[in-house]
Length: 442
Ligand code: SAH
Ligand code: SF4
Image 1 (cartoon, helix red, strand yellow):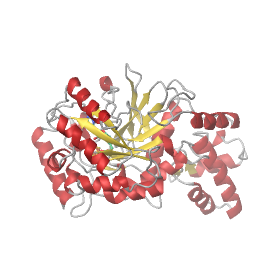
Image 2 (spheres, rainbow, N blue to C red; image 1 turned 180 degrees about the vertical axis):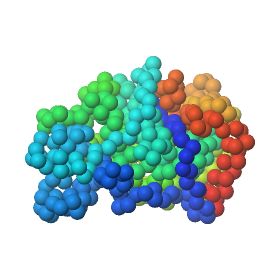
Image 3 (cartoon, rainbow, N blue to C red; image 1 turned 90 degrees about the vertical axis):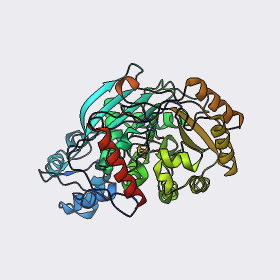
């Protein structure tokens, strides 16, 4: 994973808050309006984005096509939707001209609405997006010399309350749907004009994706000058493993060769450590894993990543060691936010090395300078401290690059939220955090 991956900060509208579940894991249920993976629209048409080929075929059959025709049309439409990125049935040239209005009367090809698009002076781009039921969330594109990374959100808000994360001061509004998750990647391809236009483009894209490295240690190979969207990180707003099914189904569309065709080696899912879902993540999705460790003692991790009270450090590291297909070529990334006088001592660095070695983890560490936000209870460690910490971990034989914050001028860096969350008073934030913690510990 790049040193320069950053996370989105996302924003919520105040409306329609979902109550936080009580004495169970704060796993959220699907939106009540979702029936069989289909979000009903007021005009009665069905949005196809987010649906797999099989479901599209079923809908075509339900709309009157015979089984064989439904299957064939679904195959064609699927290719146009997810591989070629068209947004009009009229553009589907291998589908009979008479058939296209039939499709348009019954179905739509949706995208999340873009409320605002911002460009950072360092090239980072941030989009404020809105769901059909008016909840706002964000995605960020980070171009680098050798890759382009899209940081995707999985929820509006978050049930967890990591103390250094602005998203943690918000309630969970709701899980994003499959269409809203894959829709972010599709919107990015729209905005960057990167859909393959013909079979030759598809071949070139596939070759390019094979050629470019997916690892920090990559050398040589073809460098697309950061223009192409080559990598995805599930590091936006929310905890992806608390929206497991939707994240999995969306990433399947992204990884399908006839879909968005991005290799699973180029996708990284970041979790705060939701152990019960980690193995499934490896088995059912198979993407790279990043774990927000952030501390090496129970005392400190309990404070800054409260889910630690439920799933402790040892158990978490064991789950990492058991993560399917982990190897030296596919190491787990441990994210470690640098908080002044909290988790940044030489002893902490040495303990980090000891722990990772004890569990024999093929690991790399990503040191993230803390990105401040209004009312945040911590400060960022000094650059000298971060360098000293990084050196100790490197000397222990583990790669520990310092991530360069990107997009700070447009509030696009890790955990930088604004609007709805900012408007809360300190007392309101404290009340909300206490509520979330009670729900978490149930
Ligand atoms: N919920 C998931 C993924 C989203 S957060 C998780 O917690 O892993 C993506 C990364 O940004 C996490 O490592 C998170 O701890 C980090 N992060 C959150 N707020 C931050 C801040 N203010 N400064 C730096 N990193 C932050
Ligand atoms: Fe949620 Fe991740 Fe922020 Fe923790 S760091 S509050 S899990 S988004």
